[in-house]
View 1 (spheres, rainbow, N blue to C red):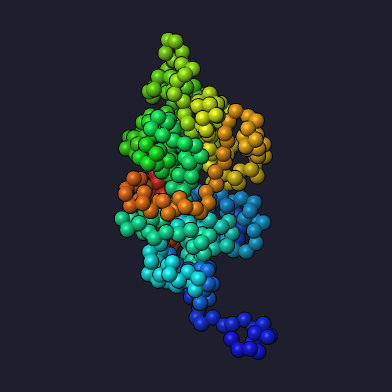
View 2: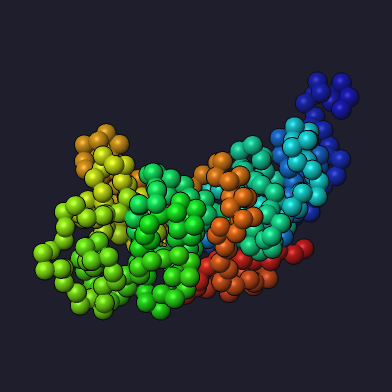
Length: 384
């Protein structure tokens, strides 16, 4: 740029532009559409430009689109959080850290702006964490794990788990539940993993590492069923069970963590009856909140919008006033992503994919996601 242009604040023309196609929406009242735009090159010094090969779908996409945030956040908003792709350009400040041709994966967790269902994304690897994709994973597998895996490992880390620990996962057949089961059993090496799920998923969840499956459909009083599990160390059968003749032992092993992937308050309101004492660091972690999960309502910290009582519960927990360590988890980028590389490389956990769609079939893909009749993640193959 010449001196006169600098004095007159005339912006420097990009050396070139990169055509981009992305799936976007404006608000909950307007259906998503593909738009065509451009990125300027050179890109920002702090950024890298990634050509996206695959992007995974998550319930948060639907929840954000249908939430009040879709109206209050102006402009077009992208869909998609997880991705895998190839770096095509590296900003000046990222030289030496990343290189053109690196195959990477990660998540882009911004509530507005670009999404990963796009031919290209630009991001700052120092804030929007990425890693080199584990070489033993396909593009679709590498795109499928970051958000759900990160949510699971962060949640399990809110307490200290050891080979004597019992873990309860509410919603074992959710994508996050799949990772929580495997991490608890194969990475944290806990003694017992108990999950709630329908019995039709029992064989699959046992293969992942679940020791006991409590069928929420056959046990309308879920807390009593879980008390039975604690007392007798076995599955409640069709809801027809009683405690041992002496009743539950007050010194029995209880759960060190209850990890809630489905929402609701049935177990929450009686969690202290199922958890080890608060002084041991036991914790109730929810990624949904007081309502059961739906495609139309934000979970995690977004649930504070619908249930202010959750804020009070969180304050009481953090100040130590009540008898429950209560955490509302909302995954953020962090060192866990670097840790995931070795975990995936060592096959400590495996990625579960329900189905892969070409990205022009996104309506069918989102319809399946909304139906919740799936096992694992739905992934879109992104093409030009």
